[in-house]
Image: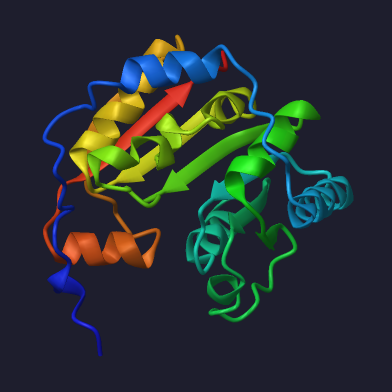
Length: 220
């Protein structure tokens, strides 16, 4: 059995918010990403739209959901939402038994491209959670992080309620600063969850990592 308490803190050659963050975020906010969107992302988008139409429920998007444990928990806790978990790995998505919930769907897609399709077609997620995305910890990998990627503009357009969780303080601070650059209200806090929402979160808690949560709400 894996020892949950053996997770090492994020190791990086970056010791503060990236010096190029503001320039990169500003550039992405002022331009349109025209990278071709793969066919499988279009397919996942249509499946999402069909599911939302069938349920008649508002969307809760759970990006980078991995095996979908967080998606299932959110669906159980929020029966008035259609909770859709998205991950690019089919293997991860099939690692757990299918959820026997009518308000829960796991789809294989590329989150960045899916956000762009949602923004283009004005599909709104009433809530959007991003739990422990890959930190891409090297300083040279800033543009791979959610807030440094060209899709950040679309991310902001598709939901009035964002929540990101991470165990790397620099990632949390960068995401907070990127939201501020975009004129989004934001709140950064350390927190201890009552119940872990993912296996990563359980592992980080057992390893005594400080967990960070960034929330942004633009709705009244």
